[in-house]
Image 1 (tube, rainbow, N blue to C red):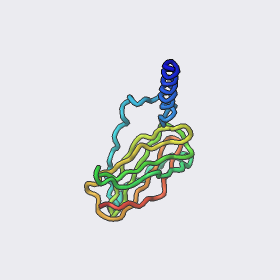
Image 2 (cartoon, rainbow, N blue to C red):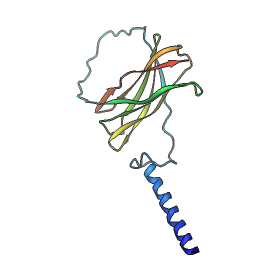
Image 3 (cartoon, helix red, strand yellow):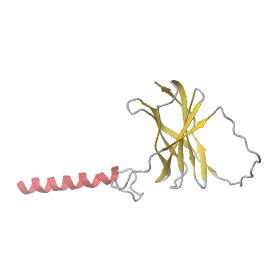
Length: 164
């Protein structure tokens, strides 16, 4: 009976530990949990009320990019952390060279932050994007997530947030 219990315990432990690899969301990316964190998001302020002028418009090359289907999977305000956040994905593209951008617009103020995107099986994931609540106007605002790569670009629908 002791041998049966010991064998059963070892078998159950082996099955439980081997199933952990199924729960790791980026199993095919080559990254492990011990890899360094992605670079932090970069915040860039863009005033919406100041028009920019250019002496001579420069011709821009025409590049036919694939339309990226960007969807915000989660967005909101984390008052305890002092940030507005958004998590997005590009459902029709799987590539590693893209950049995701969160854009906050409220009461005439626009702020953006960017982060590297990562391919995940058959779609592209945007790392959690965050913008600090410092300096943001209180009240209703909108958040969008856009995606840009060498071959694809797109923007999500706006999601409403309330800055406390």
